[in-house]
Image (cartoon, rainbow, N blue to C red):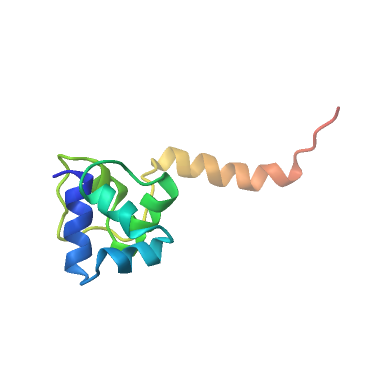
Amino acid sequence: MSFGEKLQQLRKEKGLSQEDLAHQLNVSRQAVSKWESQNGYPEMEKIIIISELFQVSLDYLMKEDYEKQETEPTTSFYLMTQQKIEDYLHMKKVLPYVSVVL
């Protein structure tokens, strides 16, 4: 499914008109129509707002072969190894005592 098709589906699921969505994004209704008809894309700032508004990931919006998961995460997290965590904690303990001499 394309970005435009996903946008249209999400908009309709929320019961929003193109005009309503345009108002929330501070763009024209014609811009929303253009995106939905696959004749262009919004700027990245607008894509991020759309992602937050509809509570979907950027991957879901932008990847054509990515399907929305039922348990779509609403927050981000980073996977870190135990070693990276220990290195980070060690640096936090050591860095306040390190001085730079020029």
